[in-house]
Image (cartoon, rainbow, N blue to C red; front, side, top):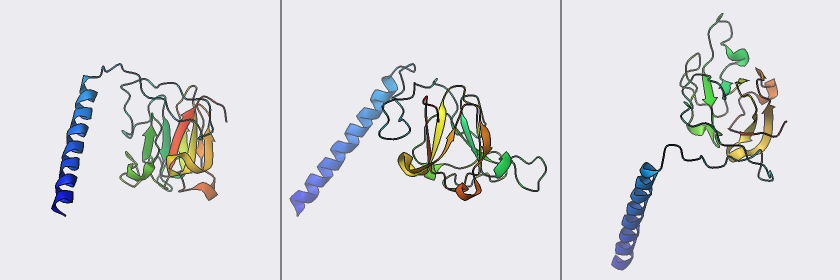
Length: 171
């Protein structure tokens, strides 16, 4: 038993050292290094999305250019409150799981984004965003959003979005 515990401690310590070394490698990488390829609309896709410009704020609650913005409320504003903006999740990069994400800057601020979106706005110029009801782009593709498109999720699809990715392939 003692040998196994000692072995597990040694393995854990080795893993911590390896992770620390891997983290240091990331600090030596140039800021202009290419981003890894993004997933396509599904596992069978043969196309991959082009790399995104670096340095863009992602998930800051501001709907900037080249982003998909998902909103807590339909019509991108709170019901009954004239002009009150809805909180949003703004995505510049694909997001495989909304579970750790929250809506920001508006009515619904701080609410988890997972299974809570009701409307959307794409400020994209060339990418098509796919929204899925399962994490990791699984389950059903519940929405395909063309560049510049905006609207509401169908009532039957309210509060079902769990992940989103983009691709240059039209819907």
